[in-house]
Image 1: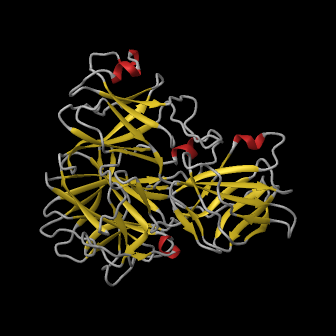
Image 2 (image 1 turned 90 degrees about the vertical axis):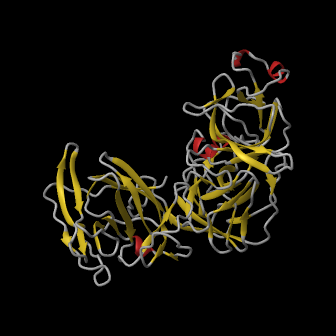
Image 3 (image 1 turned 60 degrees about the horizontal axis):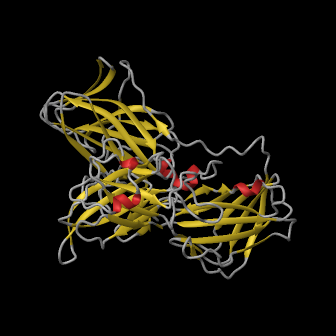
Length: 530
């Protein structure tokens, strides 16, 4: 999906067969409280991409999110009337509410402000804070990952009461980067990777602006090779990727190129901005030593497609860093993408002392139990119908993150990235409460917790209440790039940036935060955010 694309919201009576109604017929009807469906103009069901000419189209299966607010007589916004309704493009060229989503209805008695965005996110609840993340590997030959990374937003705040047609002109909110390579070491099967990229942003669909999440760790983005690279007469090969707006500092690595059994590292002598809704072109010549060069010209794409980026004055360097053996690529350190600590009926919990006096570290993985209250929490493994579960039983004193808890000491290597901790829990009382937190490798700080939309939750430990007698799954999002030297369940506004040492292992904590209660926990898993 891309710019120059328009949604038309057409009010139809619910008794009409939508697929059989022409555009002109739909626009000629009057409606009140009638179903709305969306169709594209111009229609294109061949690709979901920005083509080599930078034009953009929607295709079958694409999904957008729609928000709508009542517009008051003074121009202010009233209540929300549509909240993140998902619409998908069908094979017949019409946009329909997805399964499980209430269709949007027109209302001749109210003026409505419409807001739409792409790609759809089920976590979006606030149109002013939608978290969108690009795909880190956009190199797939079908361009699917490249295309879905191209976030779009549209607004219409001028429709009148009973408006039949609502036009939404979508605009790009990220930046398009194109790298062109030529020279004797440039090949059609080269692999190009952007470096030092912040990969997510928070979209305010009302304003159409996106704020890049610069607190996240930087990563790399594999670029998509244009199909024209495979033409026999091609002498310059082009690659593209979509990234949130940001600036690569001078001297930092812009990108790496693996071509002709060699690896090249490219830098520039000035800051290189990837700008909001603009195209950035980078030209690199790969040749013999001393003949390689890099320049960043003004882009030549018209504003109706992608905005024009100014040239960046400076000098680039193209340095060959190593030879590449395509049969034996270098193996990066293995990091955790998904991990589940295991236990059996025979599992023992090692006594780990008091949190303030003894930290849990070391190269051996184990389950532990901390206790600094009387009477102590009783810890055991019990047999349930679905398998073993951890039981935490309190008698008069509830558990806490620093006095009475259990946990798992994991020595695996993680990334300074975002993870989700999930588990199943039940309680012997209707109002059971489970507490949890995750500390760093040194057990001296707890990682930042995030809300379901990945914004800051202002805490490093948390509790979930109303745990009853049936198993229920709970999840908490974690930011391994930020931490605090204590467990706090609210009010945290500042964190410390973590180091690589902090993620060379973690400690997962659980505690029973209710009195005189048996709490059961199982199916614990931590997964990296994709």
